[in-house]
Length: 308
Ligand SMILES: NC(=O)c1ccc[n+]([C@@H]2O[C@H](COP(=O)([O-])OP(=O)(O)OC[C@H]3O[C@@H](n4cnc5c(N)ncnc54)[C@H](OP(=O)(O)O)[C@@H]3O)[C@@H](O)[C@H]2O)c1
Image 1 (cartoon, helix red, strand yellow):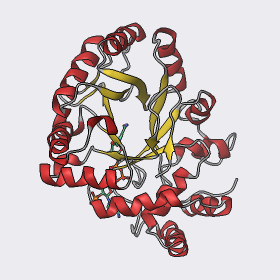
Image 2 (cartoon, protein in one colour):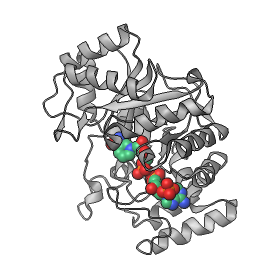
Image 3 (cartoon, protein in one colour):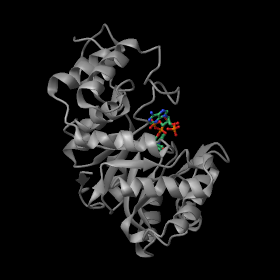
């Protein structure tokens, strides 16, 4: 598995991450097998959030890791905080950030997070409170690197005015079907399609300019958690092209869908959400594929886009 060295962040990080949002569905034993399978595939990066299964994902992972015999220091464990299902708020207050990390560490049965991301912006966020929380978490050794998720460039700039730790990761939604992160770059100034609408303040180019690694979430999903586009009859053209390329490269359609994201020169990481070891193995084959320029566009266009 090719690795990325995140600028002022974790080094030697696998470019495919195992996302653990769906881990509560597994028994501890199966979760252990999933973690072991990831490591066998040379995937050393694991993504969590306090809200996944209301903490159950972190608990399952922490319990399962103990069954594997893997060394904590060989894994890069990332969690996110600030999205609270318990009281239906987004909360980037100092108190919530610190309490969330303490709870995550307890559930994960570890004494540090390699990375902490702020999950989705709190409309009431005060960057000075975030700065205080990050200083404390860094000083106590509880968090080694910091970043954000679903965060606009100007919100990052505002944070950077007060936060002294580098913010070098932004976790954002991207799949062939949910490609709004990149669409606006092609359709700019085009009144005939809403793909020209700048929805994120130029997050893609901002991240590239500032050496911020984008982590693409839900790489196989259409809509917002509406299910997979792979083998979905609503996406016949996309599946035809995925199928052709899968045959050509001798892999599955899921590997081609992941390779499409990895092909982007922004050198993104992709977060795979499967909890099936065979599916993860299939997706990991994307690592060995470098789609041509033409193949990349063929996939893009087959997902309902047109050339302006
Ligand atoms: N920052 C954010 O706001 C945010 C939001 C959402 C997610 N995330 C992160 O992104 C990760 C991935 O999200 P996701 O789970 O929606 O991603 P995904 O990889 O696009 O979807 C995974 C789902 O697809 C299913 N699937 C069915 N057939 C599959 C196949 N052949 N190969 C692979 N998967 C198949 C999986 O089921 P099986 O388990 O049966 O394979 C699983 O339910 C999450 O775990 C989380 O860490 C972040």
